[in-house]
Amino acid sequence: SGPGLPRRPALEIPVIAHRGASDDVPEHTLAAYEAALLQGADGLECDVRLTADMQLVCVHDRRVNRTSNGRGVVSTLELAQLRQLDFGSWKQPAAGEEHEYAEYPDLRREGAHRVLTLERLLQLVVEHPHRVEMAIETKHPTRYAGLVEEHLVALLDRFGLAHPRLGETSPVRVMSFSAMSVRRIRRLAPSLDTVLLLDRVPLRLRDGSLPRGVRIAGPGIHILRIHPEYVERVHSMGNRVHVWTVDQPSDIDLCVELGVDAIISNRPKAVLARLGRD
Ligand code: G3P
Ligand code: CA
Image 1: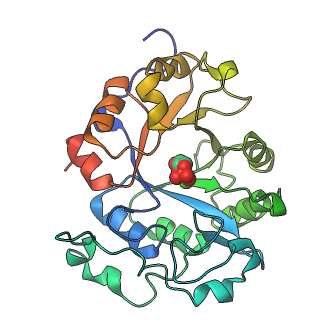
Image 2: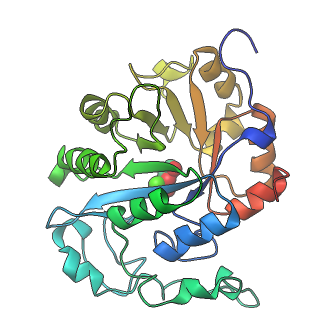
């Protein structure tokens, strides 16, 4: 494939659990991330937002309405208020199906479905016996512009994850659809990997180039179905491709054929099986 990066063999493609093992277990809960690690995922993806009292919590939507029994905008609620909510009961298994709970009863324990702070998730990661990759996405509320990144790097620093020593790499990378957010991270923690997420590939990036300092492109799988050549273009620039959200067998196969550098999936177990790693 020319001078740049070679295509990655299937067995070497890291599998990253999107919002945890979120197809089986309610997304962004400790239980979802524990399930992902039990299933053998190589890494965990999470979205982060700031609460009204400046705590980073793992919640995808601007509001808590979809994934909890409460209502309201995350950035206007304090952590203590979020802790009152149940982030588990909204998700019921489809008729005739069972949650991963059947296999891992401990995931049902008290507290496993409360709001998850990034601090608690990082604790899970650093305590795990194997290296776990972390792909943290800043959800960038304009109300707190710049503060999310500052709090994120400060928290990573507390775990020794923001500024790895010379010759070491942090297991953490920061992703965003916002080029500005990615730039802020690069300024605060220059040695962290950053991922520019892409919902569509803008014309100026079609040649596979990325903004200065960004080494990883994060296209949605829908882009690669239409523009499979994008992977080789990014590789030819010496950069990597992490694809989301890859759940269907045909999409997993496409990622393998293209030799992408990470697969982000709601179904890590199914992806690992298809890659021959079960
Ligand atoms: O991993 C990137 C992907 O999560 C971006 O989309 O909406 O699921 O955060 P979204
Ligand atoms: Ca995300």
